[in-house]
Image (tube, rainbow over all chains, first blue to last red; front, side, top):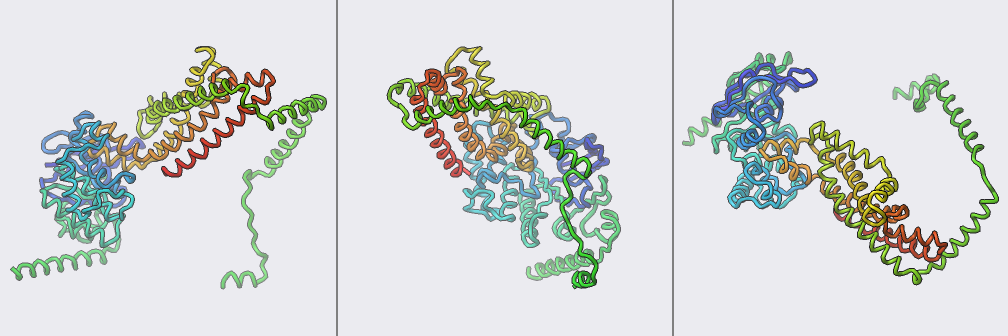
Length: 272
Length: 273
């Protein structure tokens, strides 16, 4: 569904952030993008909706060449790509409802949005999504009155308001505590499954990534150095992505997780 | 404990002073000396004419007397008309100036405008801010003749420069992530401005507008003196006729109105923040 071919990005400073990245994401596939800071993870997902203009290569979403679009075509294409940010990127002085409805701006005329007269259907959807992400009744709170976890839920709901086909998720848990991080990851994964959404999730936490995301892509210095199922991520792979380090603690935690997962799986089977 | 043993061991205590602003001692002292010499010479060059000072004090006393017994009644018609003109000038020029300053401010923001628009808007702001209101008023009075219309144009011009510069600085400091998030939804340019920019700068926009309303009233009294109408013109006439008591009445009214405007706009701004 999303095909990246030989994607390259050179910043005006001369830094080559992406060196010919090719990647295919199937529809409904959720993919974790890991790699050291500065490897180009953020640049890569921002190239997909062209918040960052790629220098070379091809981006295709459902057969449409996103790289060739003019400004109004690009705006139309962006409506189908939801984005979730590390620092939530909510408009803090606006209410939760306005933040959600801002996900519909691509479908709404300027004057309608200026007077905040969104379609009844959009407002219904916003209420339903608020309930779904666990923020029912919060529609009139200002975004800066919420906690980090709540803000990220609003961020997720805003992205889903777009009725996207693809989610770009940039470090969704980097500003959250461990428990909230797990809840947010679980929520994103559940929503992707419910709606059959494809997603690219940038994430620093390898243990969290391998637990929740079935497919892992490792980026190092602008190139893909690993692409495979989460179960294959081991010491060698981590060394290939991040460089030499004592990975014992992390691989042990990943293995422990694998065991508990399978035990839970077994329990679920026996309960049936 | 370690520092204790060091102090006890008899080695001299280390001292610390902030490093001087100019590190070269020679340059530093040369600058101090130069400044002192200039000050002495400058004071020496001022010619003080004591006879004229005394005469001035006498006139000043006459003015103080007038100030103590302001005469509101004999020129009240002129005063009321002058104030009406000044207030009209203030309100209309603030409203139009703020309205026009918004697009200029957006154009003068690095994060929103392409370079050539940025440069044009910044040049306009620089011009507006370089030229003092009085100089602009002299030009515009020459162009459009005496009266409040020239004053209205002057204040509008000054308001645009003032508001656009301060708003542009504010816009450049908004969180880029919110801009990015709004762009990512497929929102149009104006929608991004509305949701991501206006919502973030709104309190400042209102606060600065009220502040500018205040300034414009004060300026309207000043530019009247060069012929741009309003209460300044009335004041000028009174002074030219040596009617210090009427002039004092005008000054009293100006003081009261300015203080009232400052107080109420301060209260309003606090309420908005």
